[in-house]
Amino acid sequence: MAAGATGYADIIKAPHAARLLTGTLVGRLPNATAPIAIVLLVRAGGGSYSLAGALAAIYGIGNAVGQPLLGRAVDLYGQPRVQLPAALVSALGAVLLVVAGTDGGGLVLAYAGVAVAGLFTPPLEGGLRALWPGVLGAEERVHRAYAMDAIAQEVMFTVGPLLVTLFVALWSPAAALLALNAIGVLGALSVVLSEPSRTWRSAPREAHWLGALRSTGLLALLGAFLFIGMALGSITVAGVAYADDQGRESVYGWLMAALGLGALVGGLVYGSRRWTNTPERRLLSITALLALCYLPLTLTPGVLAMTALAALAGVFLAPAIACAFIVVDRHAPRGTVTEAFSWLVTTFGVGAALGTAAAGPAVELGGTSASFGVAGAAGTAALLVLLATQRVLARPGGAPDSTVPTENDPSGAVEPGFSSGHQA
Image 1 (cartoon, rainbow, N blue to C red):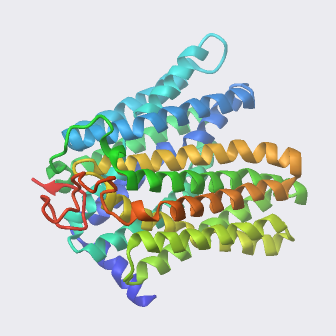
Image 2 (image 1 turned 120 degrees about the vertical axis):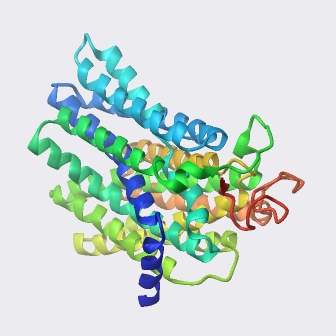
């Protein structure tokens, strides 16, 4: 583990690495906090939970549509020309929401505001992963950076809601929403002004309307991560139901904290090891363990045991995400890497929304155990997708005839194993 810590320190000390990681995390704060910030804003204005849910859903749909489109734009035109303008427009969408309010007269503008905010959320995640090879060089360091990135996601999605509640306590829901979006713009600005972001250029791409989606290997991965996202989304609802059963709202916080802690530990261990098997085979094994650890949640034992099971369920989440980053890198057609990473973000988010939607009826029909069963079923479905597509995933590039040019092609413009573009 000490060697792993040294490896992470080595990455952080690399020129530009700390700035890029910090700027990306800060720039993603508006996205990480949007659902709870929107709910608090609506409720403070006297709106219903149904209205809050509808606005949050519109934001999520806009985000799902915008990420791959903006990712493709980044691949075509570079990071500064897309990331910063998108962050500014997204922040203006949040301003429109606050100015319009959520009463009858401004409701149409409120919906427009959240749609714009979601649609123009900058694809900073995909952009960072495209920059790592040029910043870190060695493939092993890039893979460790992917693990660190997955860990940072868990931390951000834990800290983000806490920041919202802190800002609301200090000011108001409207001020909190505006402040977080302003901070997000500063994060995006920090990234695009860095030398790696300014000089990065995607490798030449073949013109194709499907873009990254013409890779069947990438499609297979996205199919699996739709279900992994569904599993995670269902746990958030099932956790609330479990806390209600226990008669203590604080139990939900314990379960989510345990889930995040498990992911943190799993990510640290995963990134500290040197792996010799292929990422595709490794992802299959990790997903099998992930699905297996979701199943005991259906037992819904006492709080202490349930918290331990939640921690166990989180252990393989960050490794699965980190390994998926490598698989995306290997299967994205040349010149589409930012778009490909953005599709992973979108698919995971859509899956989480589906899991949330499925867990609610499961609670009503079969109780809390059934809602946790959605996570187990979704994890198993993800494993089945990977098992069914092993042959496709075994071919980096993922084309049916193996002729789709990818940036990990040894004859390509960049080092084999990377599909992130190049420094100008």
